[in-house]
Image (cartoon, rainbow, N blue to C red):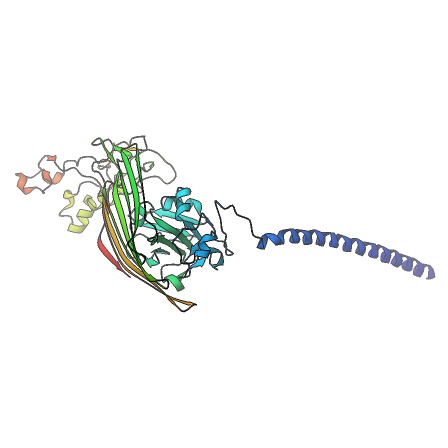
Length: 484
């Protein structure tokens, strides 16, 4: 018994020694790991609040909320000269002039100089310089910004946008702004996240705000640029700033583009998808005192050319006619015309259903028969060459009239009033299939005709005189006003 007690006590002592040694090692190991973690935290902590020195010639500012910008501060965009001299970007993301670094919103801003230096000429270029921002020009003449995965891909005039588009803080429900290039801008601001409190509805994903340059009341200035390139491309832009006196100034800016199309149409040997457009903007600033500023802005845009709303599509023909093109392959085929709306509405089956069988033979073809629209047609292999039997047409027009009043009330309050009127119209036509259709076959309904007068208007007995093709995909919108 005593021997058993001695053995248990000895084992307990060894266990205690071992346990103490293990505890000591564990503490040392934990301290080492903690020391490494503390060192890592100490090394990383200054990066959270450190100020990075920025070269004078290319200042960059990063917001605490993650927004960033590149470029110099634009002179004349704010009434705070100290902010301008320090190279800070002044934004109006919260409806008042603030430095970009002090705004508690995830916002990115580009000054006019930064846009020019980085060759950001339109929204397609802008998206390449911004994280989690995507721009899409849709088929039916509209456009959409997607911010953080939230955007507007709905087609139609009744759709609500998810990203607010503003010019000088004035909202635009529908605009042709993205069909021309940027010119004479003070800055572009992109706000991420819902902005309904300050910018109203339709700002679920964020806001893109374009701030135009304002007149300089101190100095006369003028500039112009003109470019000539292949396809007889002529591009011109210019700005004139005229101070009338110490309180009134006028600024005029314009942009012009004319070029031939990049796409050749084999059907008539012409070139399509060209550009012929211009835009002008005039601004009058009235500043009777340091506390009062009134800006009146007018803008006009016009385009009339053969712009194509779509580009050439790769299609592997679906032989069943259920789908126009196969979803699992790409090829240089013409879509199966049986699947198109134009074929269905002109088919014998639909004529028969609608007339109780009396007008069945007036249909152009059968949905169970061969493809009479595009059967046997081929597609040029060159992606810049098409074969279409009518050229696209495109007409767009837009104008804005807006006023902006800033009135300082005391040392802490500023009254900011913005109002405006906008109207735009677009009328376009294009062949969605980009293929010339076959002539209509002889319709059996003409067989018993004894005189051409008894046949349908587009047919004569024994032969077809009307060239049929799928109905073009067209969108027209005439003078849809937007008032704010």
